[in-house]
Length: 297
Image (cartoon, rainbow, N blue to C red):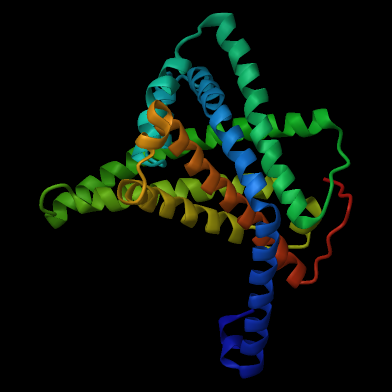
């Protein structure tokens, strides 16, 4: 619906009714199964982080960027709360450089398979939201998930290369505007870049995993990734404050407090994944798309 249409009372009323219906549908579906799916996502996310960066480090070496693994880790740690980063940083860096030669490539294959389980979990979330099932054999779906992981690694490499250019530009801008102390432009640009990379990766994942008939029909894919990216940034900003003000997990979980905070963070991201998928599916249904039990993709 065009913005000019909202100026007409009947169009505006129709828009409000449709929006309320979409919100009610999304809320109902998320309340029904969102918690279970988010819990599964949190477990798989924590399980898949280390294999993913092993794959990233190995592929970085293939492209002549052996330092890429460390850069990718730093980029990821910037996108999670500090308490999560402090728990994951050292084990992730150790896992990336613990193997060489044939053992490294064996670890890459295992890492692709393990990380593909997370992609398949996201595929199941999206399929469930659209009410479709795939008729492709298991091995084709798994190979597709592995290909998506490799694409994500390459896209991350490109994003990190762009970040170097943007950081230099931001420093020039900050110096020219004479920001006192730490250049504000660098801080703002860092957050915007993190948001942009998240949005790009989420759009790539949702774009490739959304059932083909909905992509062919022109139903929007961006609302789900946009919601998840905004939710992610809010969690990144607010979760540390909440934990520091209202919760003391050290008293409850002792030495496991950092792991529990990591699981909570990934649970929240998993919940956003469900909401994003349900949002896209509800919009598609509101536009006339009908869910099917089988799909050609």
